Amino acid sequence: MTKRLSQSNAFGTAIGSCLPDPGCGICHSMTTEGGTIESLNFPDEYPPDLNCLFTIQSPSYTTIQLTFTTFNVENCCDFVSVFDGTSNPLQVGLNGYTLPDKSTSTGTTMTIKFTTNSDNAQVPPANAPARWQATYTFQGSQNRFILADDEMKNQTALNEL
Ligand SMILES: [Ca+2]
Image 1 (cartoon, rainbow, N blue to C red):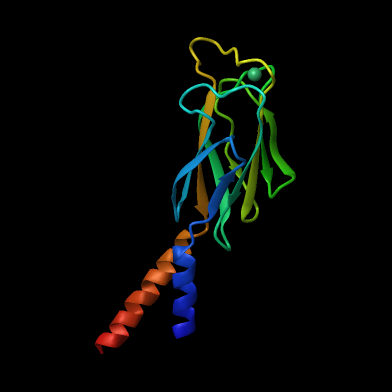
Image 2 (cartoon, rainbow, N blue to C red):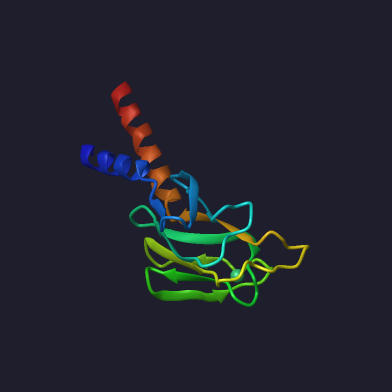
């Protein structure tokens, strides 16, 4: 019983991680449920000549769902690609001005590659500035948090007997 409790508690405190290459953008608002990731200088325009990787790591036994919430990526020359793990492509060569589909990993790692060419982004005025933002959420953790919560209640109930 004590062992199970300590495992659940260790799990419940894990928040995963989101690491951009230096000078590539930012991950923020990280919690046990996920976080937000955005292009460099967001909400302003991203610069040219980027060759960037963002690596998202979720807590054990969870998967990662990525949902773009802003997507204005120069539709000739700048590209976003999403990989399951580090190399299995989920969506490759995304650009343009409509929100891409959601991506879901099969394991605890998702990698996002973002490259921009040497020209500043030329996007339609209605879409400017060129930028993107996405939220990532950890899937499959909810039951474990509830389980951990129930175990805490059970433990409390036992202590009160
Ligand atoms: Ca560009």
